[in-house]
Length: 411
Image (tube, rainbow, N blue to C red; front, side, top):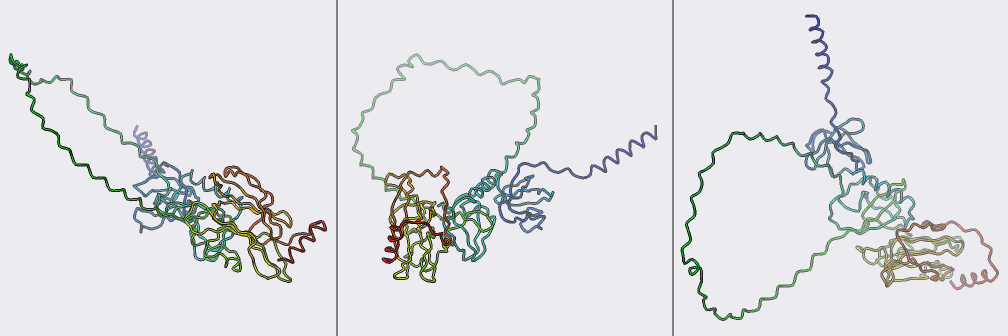
């Protein structure tokens, strides 16, 4: 019997020693890293040592949170504390990936130069997580625009609600009966003439004096204007897509054309075709501009520049002002006579896509149709804003050749 007790004690001691390792805490929710790199702290203090460093898009498990700080666990088992504003929900991460996938097929509205390091955000908001940085003097493709309030809440991870604490069961009341207070005495009886005593004498009413008219309330002060920010959706050369502030961007159109902007901001530009002036090769350009930023649309004017073979300089072939235009601007490469289309608002407030043909220095409106932003249409042979290559010779009639020679001589 003593030997059996000794064996049981040995096995119990062995089991206790094997169970000393704490079990991992269950996950409350999943989240993703928003910034490009995020250090995890071993303690709640901001100056505590870094326990691990995670990258943008890495999946984390939320295991604890206190107010705005959350404790997370990586896929490798490392744990640490961070600010929940640096995390994204699975829905937000899916939206970000879908945005990058859709933007990879979007037409560039022009390349822009960054003159200083610029952070890329997941949303058009200053408080949204920044997951990348565009280096100085780098170029990006502008593919979208949005106007948002300068101060707005960030869309960050929201932890689940803590389970309500379990309440202790109330102790059952004693079945022992308690002795209550003694009964109240009966109320006194009413007097015999209580009806006469209840009649009140009517006092003479003085004539009402005309009250002076109430003063008119002061006019309400107009609400203070909400400061707004212009944001641009950009795509880097390595395929990353994100939102950046529009102000630090500058469209990379050649200076000999940009000098005619007259202080307006260039919002998109396209090279239409090449022109050979002796040994010099120039491009005819289409651009859109806006007079003042902070508008819910992208441009209020567009212009076509052609290179004059007679004067050896750029001249305006067509200009249209005082319009409300939206992205995307499309240039359709169709041989020696390209065409382009723009989305503008009509007098009725609806959007229309207007298509123009570019024949030498003549610009003509050839089509006007309603535009549905939600409809996805495949545009044939979309041209980029980069200088086009030399076009192959196209067979034309003798009349077309003669007309082109006359046009070149007049230019």
